[in-house]
Amino acid sequence: MKIICIGRNYAEHAKEMNAAVPTEPVFFLKPDTAIIKDNAPFYYPDFSKEIHHEVELVMKINKPGKNIEPKFAHKYYDEIGIGIDFTARDIQAKCKEKGLPWEKAKAFDGSAPIGKFIDKKNLKDLNDINFQLTINGKVVQKGNTKDLLFSFDTIIAYVSTFLTLKKGDLIYTGTPEGVGNVEIGDRLQASIENEKLLDFQIK
Ligand code: MG
Image (cartoon, rainbow, N blue to C red; front, side, top):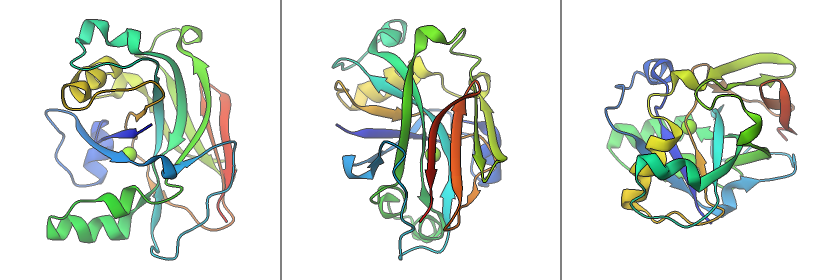
């Protein structure tokens, strides 16, 4: 399986990164070795001094697809989860400065913790999903899918023009504003509509 991540999909986050608001989806990949499941801890890597949390809603692809039309995109995912797109911001800044790819800042081991998934039928409106991240009990990021620049269906249509989607692929749909540092000892908890789906520690 592969992990596809959408960048700058909330205008307020693009602004806090001093990045332009994109006119078409921006995406990058993480390998399956980035996944952390079952609330296992994240081990702070030696190569960075600035690991940022980015809480994101995640679609789980349920069947293969290529060149998917937007009107059929909803048939390619049944479940929504929540995860963290950990980013070594110090390394990313250096890569950006030199115009180099970001992979080592984004795709490292453990950079994609993922929580439990819920059936999308249990969500009233996919364009009005509340989600949030707390660190040590304090809310640090809050988002709602009404603020997405590119909807779930638009993302699937766009990405599938370049990459064949396969069953089990995950699509991280972008982070709202409020990204920031994590520290060893922190406890991160993420929820969708007040249902806690991810709960782990930084070690
Ligand atoms: Mg992200």
